Length: 322
Image (cartoon, rainbow, N blue to C red; front, side):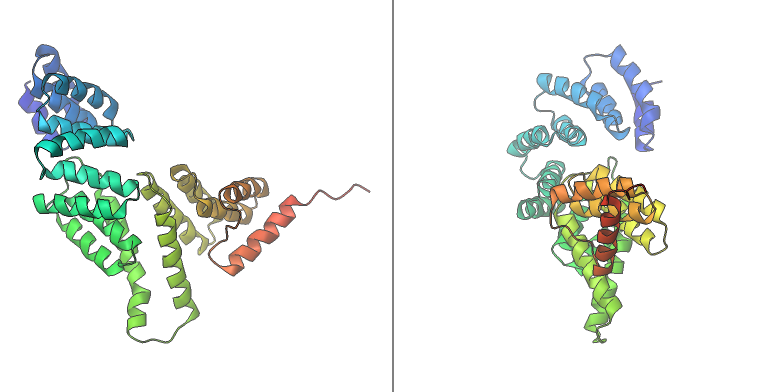
C-alpha cells in the first residue's frame, strides 16, 4: 500500500478507509508534510476534526507558507466551532492570496453564523468570483436571500447549487440542499398566487404568516446547528397537521437541541407535549420558552388559546380530598 492508495480512497469519499493507510504512511515518513496533510484531510472528511487540527498545526509550524494546510486548518477549526481560530487561519491565507476562494468561503461562512449579513454576502460573492463551482457559497447565499425575503432569488441559487458537483468536504450535504429547495419552492406558492391576483383566503394568509415566522426563526439563530434545528422545527409543525403529536414533540426536542435559546421551538415543544398528554413535560418546556421570551406566542391564535388552557390545567393544584 502507498499514499496513492489512500488518495484514491479520498477521491471516492471513503475517508474511513483512507485513514489507516495514510496513518501508516505518516508513521513511515513522519517528516513528510504532504502525508500528514492528506491524513488530516481524511480526518476532516471522516467528521473527526480534532486530530486534523493537531496535525495541521504542527505542519504549519514547520511550513508556514503551506496554504492548503492553512485553509484546511480553518475548516477543521470551524468543525470544532472555533470560529475565531478559523478566522485567523483564513486571514493569514488572504494576506498572501487575496483571491483564495477557499479562504473567502470560510470567512463568508463565519460571518453568516455571526449574522454579519453584508460581510458574509461580500465574502461569498468574492469566493464565487474565484471559484464559480463553490457550491457551499451558493447555498449560504441562498440562505441569506431567503432570510431577506427574496425567496425567488434563494430558489434560483439553490437550483444552481444542486446542479454542481458535490465538493470533497461539503459543509452542506446533498440531502440538505434538496430539503431546502423543497421548502423554499413551497414558500413561493402563496407569493405566486398573490401575484396572479387571487383573492385573499384564510389559508393563503396563514401560509404567508408561516413563511414570515419561519424567517423570524431563521434570523434569530446563528450557529451551524441551527440548520438542523430549523429543519426539525418545520418537520414538527408539519406533524401537527397529521395529529402525530408524539412525532411533533420528538422533532421539537431535536430543534431545541440544535438551537437551545429559541423560545419558538420551546413553545411548540410544550404545545406538542400537551397534545400528546404529557403535561409535566409540556409545562417544563413552556416555562423554558418564557424564560427566553416572556411574550412568546405560537403561530396561530387557536394554537395559543389551546396552549394557555393546557398550561392553566397543568398548573392548577390538585383538588382537595374529600
